[in-house]
Length: 116
Length: 116
Image (cartoon, rainbow over all chains, first blue to last red; front, top):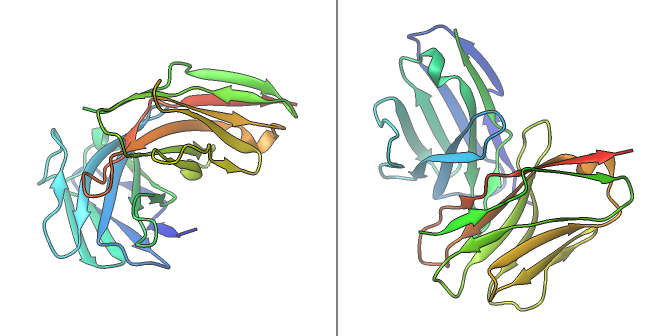
């Protein structure tokens, strides 16, 4: 199956700092990637759709200036949590559909963010 | 809007036995895709099985099979010969047809416990 990686897997930061999370498709190109947030014992909540070469599309209620998304290449999308606060602490997951099966999304291993 | 419902928040099964996880969905589309994803304690989302709505034949992947009832909008997952490694959260997901939104719609998930 298609492989998606995320870096870092764990990050602890101080309140007010910015944190960048990378999502890479390792063996396929992805013009679209998705960013999710997951709270403990809950389902995935879609935050935004990342589009290579254009602006991301954010879901209703997601602050664009807080969660900056850049899809710099066909294999890399980044999520930057700006001026992080404790309420931003969560599990962030990215996914991407490979070109062969564009209807199927493959997920990265996730990034645990803890803001102190 | 499409919705996915997993009415059972938790289930348990004895090792080597069979268990069925239920999922219903609502859509006005005739062509779409359905998925079951597994999320073990590592929190990595793993694709278990997928079903194209235009295919009448139920999908099967080794010990995992689905019962797809299109008219009833039901998509249950059967796990045969349950193993300890099957213990996880299971999410049912819906994707609209090609050419439309690529977003997945997830159910709330169901926690499966496998007892030795």
